[in-house]
Image (tube, rainbow, N blue to C red):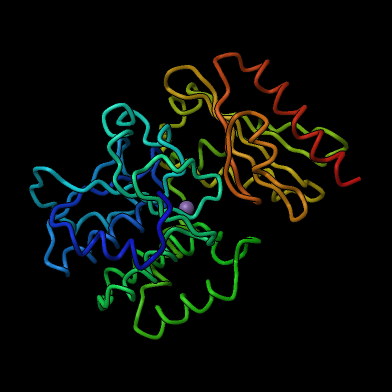
Length: 317
Ligand SMILES: [Mn+2]
């Protein structure tokens, strides 16, 4: 069922125990949304717990450290920033069919939950911000920091094409009430761990150009993770790297997963739809950022990816 903000607020008021789920390889938005929502629920006097199949990067400790989960027995299950059941990762089998409510900003959302509250916003955190207002819950600094985290990370620190006037209004309101934006920006956008830097240096070596330099592809293998000491949880910024190159309209980062399969993250310039490129590979996402899974055959997957990218590049010529 598709629901709106008011109906979503009603579900939160009606229930007493909640389990909030984030997507695999959790980023700032799924975590910011989850912990902000947990804080809203706590302030409403509800019990709440959190679950994600993957390890959370230490970068996010300012959100996770202060969080003590409640014991929940038969919780109302909410997935935040999760467009598809598959994205729950290794807990998908156990929880996929049990999600009572999905709160999401991906238009590619597959409406897998019993109740689906999906809005086309820059970040899921933008939706959570408005939900707090709808519920009449006053935002404290911790919650503002969580919301700011999702808002800033999903917009590349307010630089991507998904930035709307509403994004600035939400950010301005957070700043008015007090938010640790300088500290969060420093952690999210200006600090690299030594292991990440080693990974970035190795990954840069794999850079390939296609279609007269309009497309750039980087590949990260499990071996590179081992050699650098880095991990999946901190390699996210590399996805933005190919598109930073002059003349590149489509940037792709292919990542080998622990099970030997491959995943691709696609980032595009204005005018090229990344979700279209990924849809042809059975993936999805947003206009500027999307992803898809390959099988275990790197060469075959890459061939299909390049074919799909070519269709989109041809479309603009
Ligand atoms: Mn998001």
